Image (tube, rainbow, N blue to C red; front, side, top):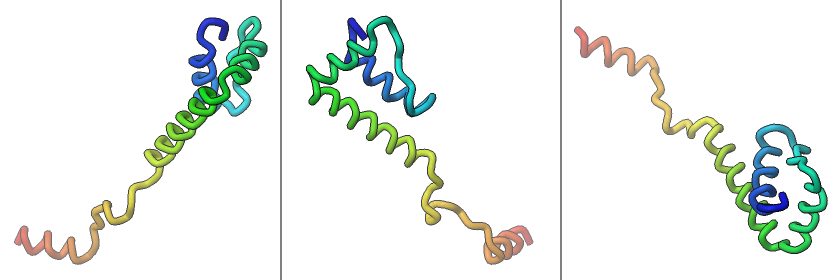
Length: 87
């Protein structure tokens, strides 16, 4: 936190998604460094939060089932066509 507060903040947000919502990177003085970073750089902190939110949205979209139109259904008509082609 002392040397790279922006990176620490970004990782903290990511690990809150990956590990648990109240996760914090705890180091000596981390609470003070976190508060100082957030107070001194509110725009940068907001950009980091926005970027993390976008990453979470991409992750959620990636983990949802694809549109039904993209699946290849195998119905009775498909089975009949396959049998006719074989015969």
